[in-house]
Length: 148
Figure 1: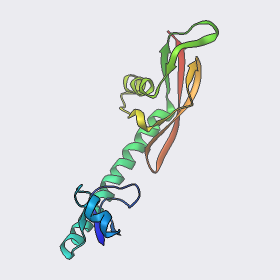
Figure 2: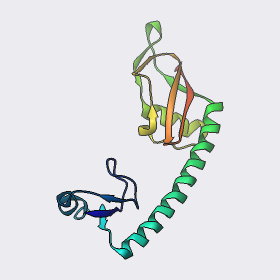
Figure 3: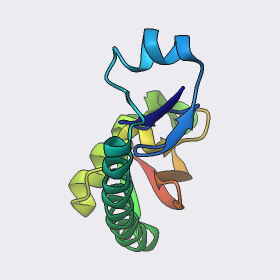
Figure 4: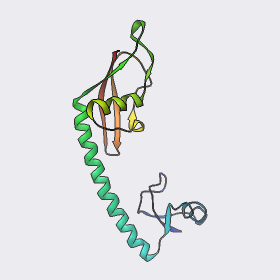
């Protein structure tokens, strides 16, 4: 059955794409969940509008991600944490801590789920965190964990 996706789907494609799926998958899952439309002539025209809107939104998201990347790559984000002997932290620095520090020091709101961190930050020092803000924009920036 030919369908038009109304939302991005990890396995099938992006919003506005016309794809061929099994009849049962379309009838039992995609159509009732509102994730797809049956590909009729009128719906195909609507799919073109969805793709154009998606492309415009994607370009805007890419531009804003590149702007954020230029700002964060040039900065060193400082995070204060309590530490004990041997510069070991009482706990660890998490992605939420990094996102909060970026918000306070650079006035940029980052989603903690878009940050790729080293396994765990449990000592004072300088670390590199990667931000994946867009599928085309992925950049590293530096954080420094200092004693409180």
